[in-house]
Length: 325
Image (cartoon, rainbow, N blue to C red):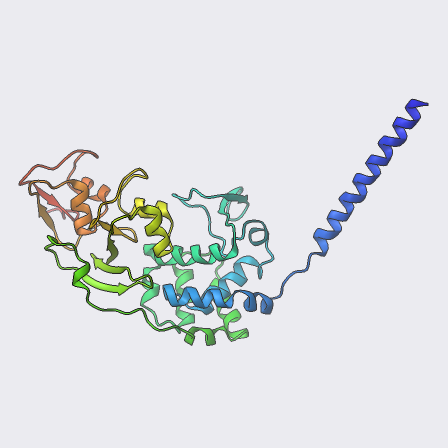
């Protein structure tokens, strides 16, 4: 008798599991997909905001979002809030999801919110050298941007540029590119430069939080304020904390000092000046910051071991020496 009861009980549980499993499958299959128009309506304001801040056409951002995420319906978009197919790449220490794309089991970035994906898309394009030429184009030149993205290797699809252009023209997204906010004020601000800084730095912009940005070796930087740390600077400029310490060849445990030069983007491989004569107190890091050159390149050009110190009076090359003919 007990066997019959137990058998009936197990069968009932199994039946219920099948019912619930079937319900979940039906629910997943019947989840409504959003259309391109609905996607545009949902994310257009974010795209315009990113355009005003980073000078990437809103039409391009939205068209890429539509194309890369299947209008927000792809697995990457629904499970990882990744609307632009951005892979992990070296340096990414956030959450991730694995999928087969160009190769099996590739690593893609995972975000808490779709907004974070849009922000990362702006960082991705604005802070990688291979996309730098795009920012020389007019903000309304969506065709130039679309073709430039393909040329720079953003996607492997040979029709990628045409697909973007077709989406932009079908939904008249180019009209969003004239919806720009007022330009960030560009004005001289010598009072922000700490005393004792003899080099002249080009004023770039006054940021929305009244932080002043300068240019050195065509790279944006700020002078640290009292109380600054990596996380505060990252929050003020909408970048990741790990980017701040990596761009400046620092460690996560480094403490910042008032007046310290802090770059907001990767330093360049070479300086505008050919060489530097070491003076007392110079360090390799200080020299790399002074000229906006990567610390690894400074060591390499001078055939010095990483971590070694320069000698007073030593000539340090800031560019790769060309062989004599």
